[in-house]
Length: 107
Image (cartoon, rainbow, N blue to C red; front, side):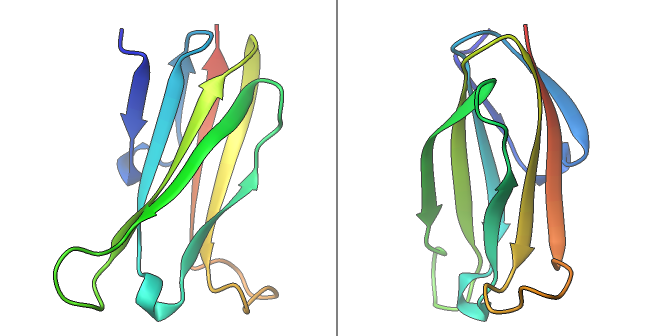
C-alpha cells in the first residue's frame, strides 16, 4: 500500500481507510477567478492532521479552473469526518455552492 492515497471529487460522500502515518491527498477543482474557494470546514484534530495545503493555478489562459489540494496525515487510530465547502468568502450566510465530505478511518 502506498504512503500517499490520492482522491478527488469522485470520492465525495465515501469512506476511506488509512494506516497510521499514511497521508491522504484530496485535490478538488476550483474556479478561482470567479471568486469561489474550497474551505476546510471540519476536521477534528487528533485522528488526522493537516500537513499541507496548496493551490495550483489554472493551466492555459486566464479564467480556467485550477486545483486546491490538502494533505492530511493519519496520526491516531479512530474515525473522522472531513468536510470541505465551496463558496465565495463574502457569501457567508448562503449555502455553499458545493460540498465535499469523506469519512476517514485510521486502523
